Image (cartoon, rainbow, N blue to C red; front, side, top):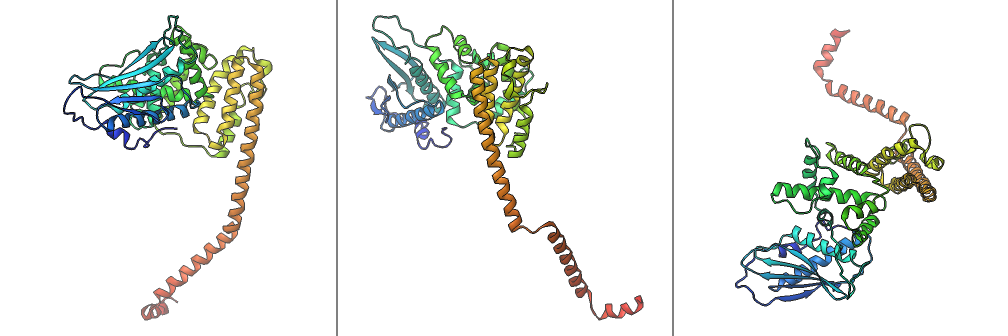
Length: 420
């Protein structure tokens, strides 16, 4: 679920020019439907607008990460009137065993939609990450830290407005030195200049979207957030979560280069037909040495298999991006099987292969049924080749006769006597 154009009137209220007559006047309060958000802000419309905005963002976030609709700790937004501009800030406040997430800011100038979305998503991710490690009254508890790229990447993904992000990320991918995966993951502070900041937004969005497209992508982001509360650094949490996909930094950079290359393609790949997808899938299920991907459990420890699998996984990911929708579940199943095989989890590999083969057989049956139905409709409603040919001849003769009739006149009849 993404917002797209579903923001309605909420961002318009956020972006209205501030016209406050005085400062430090009493704040009004609004509570979101889920009651997780409490907003204190000046004016009549701003508190309600922020509450609705945050609640809609929360629902999209839950759907994106496939999370149940539950929460433990509240999130409070406090927006005051000041004469000095103040950026939005998030604080985690512990009072004994209770934690509160407080977002503070000021108007004027009016609040920017992107800034509000990013800080709300950051608070949602923090609240989820800290659930598995609640603070104790007598312990020196420390909150998890959500990396900057994840908060902004998720918020841009949820907003569903990539029309300006794609060109920026594409220009970066086509540059002489495109940013690597580490360049994106290690950003700790937003760049000061506008161009660098927009480049960071675009790459954070591409990184997040690419990770979510991995098999089980939403569940892996859940696990990543859960790991943040227990590990000392984000790098450790990322390695623990994506060990199967990226066993080392080189594998991560290769995968990231593939994502950039896919985005930087001059022609956006369109969906393949069902038959073309099935044919390409058959080709990818056979490794260069002739062995099928569906029967490789006895070679799990062979070096040649470890060398061949990463490239085949990248090709399957490419087919998943542009293959016919009818085959995407089957391709996802084969991807999961290949990743389990690379991790030498043979039992999971066999189960994934069986499930993928079943999905593939269903897709083949549906494709065959559709083909038969279309062939029947074509025979029923479209004349055959011979009939078409004869009709073409008849139409040509009719046109010739009409032309001949049109050219007949007394002068032509008189001249015909001299042609004999």
